[in-house]
Length: 164
Image (cartoon, rainbow, N blue to C red; front, side):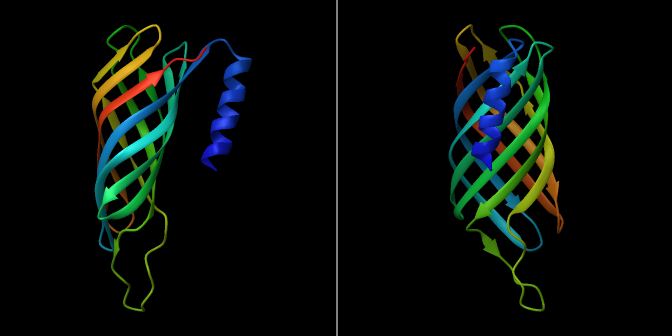
């Protein structure tokens, strides 16, 4: 599904000169806890960042997290990014958490649904743009999900290359 979304976005980007896209790598960490599921860890991720000339931005990424199990997170985000060399941003996010995690069975013996989801907000205060790409440090995210879930995210470092 992620690959299909990436291909659709890339096709759309080539049709419009008003959009720049940047594939990126990131070092990320997260903590997810609910009444039935807990997962945390640090890992690496890849994704694509799209930026319209109006400074509306979208991002999709896939991350492998090691720690409490081997989990995979996928994130879809949309928001606004400031124009200029210093380009902080804010995004609304939808995250999905797949893979191994600590689970508590229900009273009837059923496992929690998988993947678990989170809706949240992501703040990117230290993002710096160049003509060839960007570098971003210390991106913070917080979200809510089912079963009283709370999720904390941090991207320690993210580096992207602009493709026009």
